[in-house]
Length: 248
Ligand code: PGA
Image: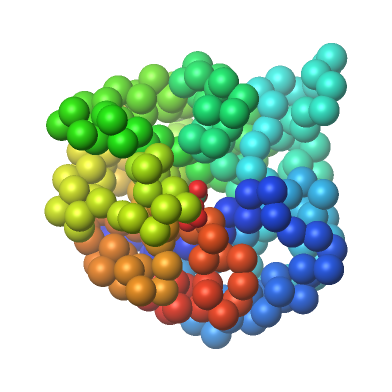
């Protein structure tokens, strides 16, 4: 089964109101093709201005708290993010797993919160360089995935959850795994999803992330079970992002 490609930009801690014209330019690129859904996950301060500035792509957030409200200074609930008309929330990015010490249990709760607020959760998994070198990357990532997956199965059709496979050592480094290694990992993730969710597992997009750019996107997107990309650095300008969107 071939899913419509999904290309998501992750702006991380980049972007000010002065960058809204760039978002508009990316939205214009997205409007020119129908073969992929495009979204940009911006810093929380930009969600509402971005939603108001663009018309041809979705806007998302980069994190949410698992609880609906309460004494959590500095945090945002999924419902608060939904109120700004965001449609996606990234959960479990390796930078948050490392910087904020988020565990698989935390990530699972955040994914459930995001989906419960009627948003699409993009759940990130990926191995470190040492884990890749150990030869056990597939086993390790599938284990991380199974511990992070939302355990909701009733009425779940897979359309509001995506998995982003992001080898940590490939993020922001310009290095990517071999295409065979990407194919092997994405197939293992697909098998795990189908085993866990049944047929709904076929509807879940599996995105590749980590130094995806205009030069490698075409080859990566052709791989079976690579249903799109999660793109950091190359999503920051329309000029760099356009070839990635075109490759989809
Ligand atoms: P990168 O980041 O494309 O800059 O490697 C991807 C990500 O961290 O989501």
